[in-house]
Length: 67
Image (cartoon, rainbow, N blue to C red; front, side, top):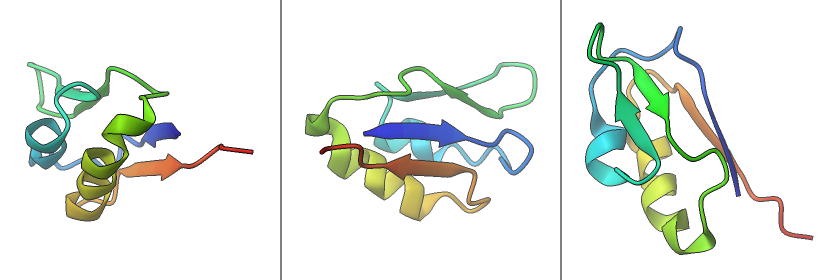
């Protein structure tokens, strides 16, 4: 799985950090998303998918790259 974030679209709600703290964090300066792991393990697919769904700014995308 590949994950990308668009800081321009991030509104700083922090849902992603609550749902998948292994993958996402927030900048102290403005609360925008920080991507900690752009290729998280498949074990985190459920929480990353929920973070994508719960992002009010639609700033997160996840792609499945399995062959």
